[in-house]
Length: 453
Ligand code: AMP
Ligand code: ZN
Image 1 (cartoon, rainbow, N blue to C red):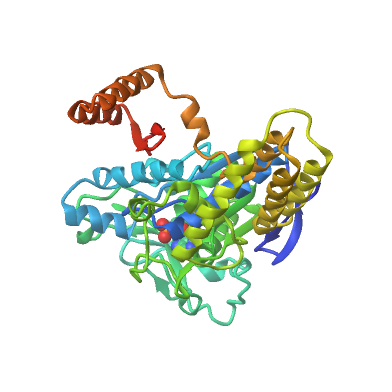
Image 2: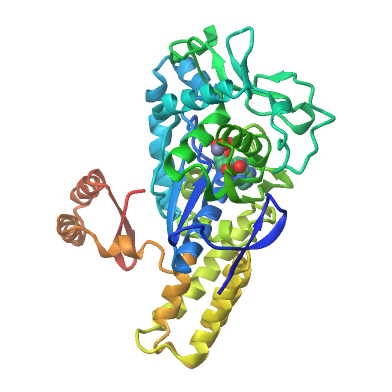
């Protein structure tokens, strides 16, 4: 089956296949680790997970690189306000990011490069741009990319900048197309940077935000690679600048296919830190929603349509998942029946049609309906195959299956303590299990355990 995806560069749906040897090189812009990511950010990461899983569903290998922005205006401001070294400030947010990805059943990328570990690569790229005449040092010691020297600028955003290029410099990492101008590759040290800074050929300073993604993607995926993704707000200026930096330096095309997901909104506005209209994953878990239910909501809209976040959709997700669970409980291994394979074909056509997950869910629910009417003999394999992409049907089951023996032993001891109504002992054992990285849940049916995430 041919996979088709919407390429932001051509603004068209195009057939997709990796350029070489069955492996897809995929770069996904990662979090700025100055705070906990909100579920708007996770919409982007979960969309990228669906993309990755669909590529794997099609039989390709994926080499995914996702950066961690651990030096920028916001991380520096946070670290200096807290009076701690930058690395100490960002560490807990990096850890939280990985824990949250697990909670949402996101498959890990192959490489998670942090910006602060790649300063020499960034300096080398900036040097190349200066040598080739695409970048210049400003009077304050910062280095800027000269937008008017790069004729293709605006190609991704589909904006003709010729008449607008003023050559004015924008020091901030974020700007809109009305204020487009030369952007910072390297920022000279300022007193507000405090102890944060690196030596460079242009003096002490730090990288601009955009350069890290060009430098690190090319390091791990080569000068030209298959796919690059992010939220739609990354398209301009961040991705436009990545293209300019990379292509000006190498003279080669940077990325073949660009994909962007639409925003998660709240009451019609983008969910964002600055508007204060956000929920972190932790906020929702604390309200009693599970990672599985949240993942369901985030994936169950086409990635190019904006999605309005509402608690009703979590209620619906809970009900839908219950229906799926009831059906999979009846499903068994064995030869897959013809009628079930037809739903798998529909599912496969849907995911390969620019990741049409709502349509893929429709195929899954047809399978649920027919399992309920015809019985589940041989259907388990079809549910499993669909779940390779969705990651919600058997969510967390793998973690339950490999509970280590010492945890099982503690659980048994705790079950006895609870039978004897020895609540202090029961609590102490729960704490011991928690220290080992597992969370116990008590219900009418007894205890269940999951890896603490
Ligand atoms: P940031 O940490 O702001 O650089 O954002 C990390 C990722 O989340 C980027 O790919 C953004 O485009 C994406 N993002 C931020 N806010 C939203 C939102 N409300 N909906 C979808 N994606 C978002
Ligand atoms: Zn990026």
